[in-house]
Image (cartoon, rainbow, N blue to C red; front, side, top):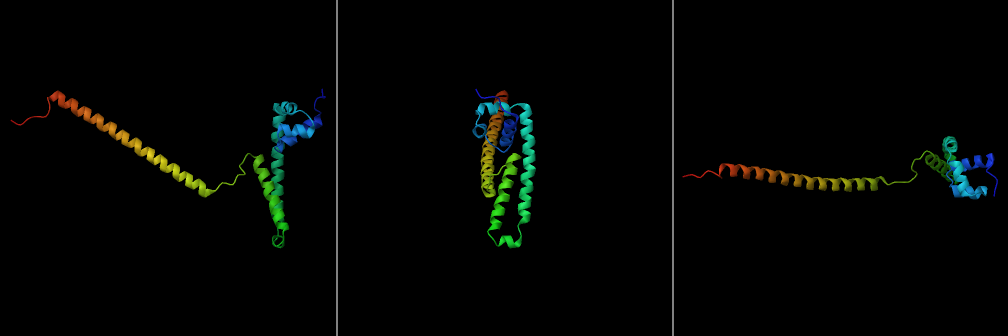
Length: 160
């Protein structure tokens, strides 16, 4: 049986978890069972520490992204190095977004608009069906009332 996790291992596990690693990946890195890692990292104090580390990393990656973008000059744009810097800034931006639980997925606005239009069309059709059903029900009620009135009065008056 392995000895319990050291404070150093727990801290390293927290940092790895804050960076998005799974319990299994952390276990492999530390050469420890993933269940042991999970047990330690799901304790309330550890969860709070991981969130704090994520907040610190968010600021760190945001700063890197800003510095990378700010460092690109007109001369750099003419060189391949600018592409590398832009890529680094994009990676840092993605990392920052992941740490703040924001999407990094590219979503086409046109696809979204097309889907929304289709949904609106579906809703309009359903509305028309419901209105038609409501109209038929109302007409049936009116016809029932008229029939009842005619029955009470002995039908329409006859001219003699």
